[in-house]
Length: 245
Figure 1 (spheres, helix red, strand yellow):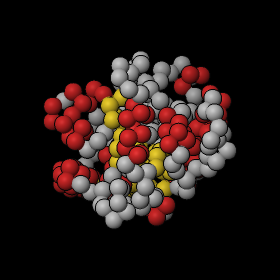
Figure 2 (cartoon, one colour; figure 1 turned 180 degrees about the vertical axis):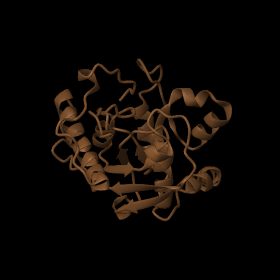
Figure 3 (cartoon, helix red, strand yellow; figure 1 turned 90 degrees about the horizontal axis):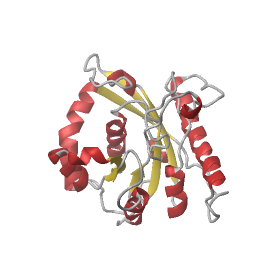
Figure 4 (tube, helix red, strand yellow; figure 1 turned 45 degrees about the vertical axis):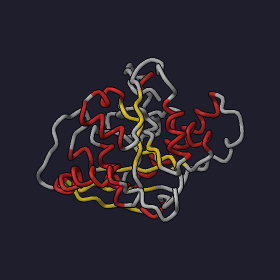
């Protein structure tokens, strides 16, 4: 994509008309260090995840910063006629929630987006955090795998306040009073030790831990408190994980 070509294509402008008025009604957005998000070129954006409305919030933030999001989205969402059409038109990538993909690996589909110089949002936790206090839990390898295989930056980002708009596991949006959502963009995670080397299981685990450390540090700044020394691990707390990556 040309350096001077806006990513705000007609489909994203249409989505903005649909979503932005409502999202601005329910919340104001305070973006910290937004200049750290690359203005051009491909990158992976890795946010924390604790509310079903998180992807919309991140989409609003990216719109404000001039970049358009492409998500690895639940394949079931594509089955709804209108929603599915909008997801496909805006370049979102369907991901099956359980078992192997019947078609291509979704990261292969994401690679096409990366080749076009666009941004891919990959939640490193794979699903809503199970941590009781909504700190980031153990991560999965999808984000670092994408960044390393495509040799692109991985940008951590954290937000806090979204839970006031829609609680974790909640289905209803709180309209009033208007909430404030704080968002902080981080510097690219230093993955230089892993680039150009075989991506075995241990390398991916170690690199993913660096990403989770970066996201957690940003969230600590927003919350003004320290995260637990031990990151929540669903497999050790008798909780089933639903995310594929």
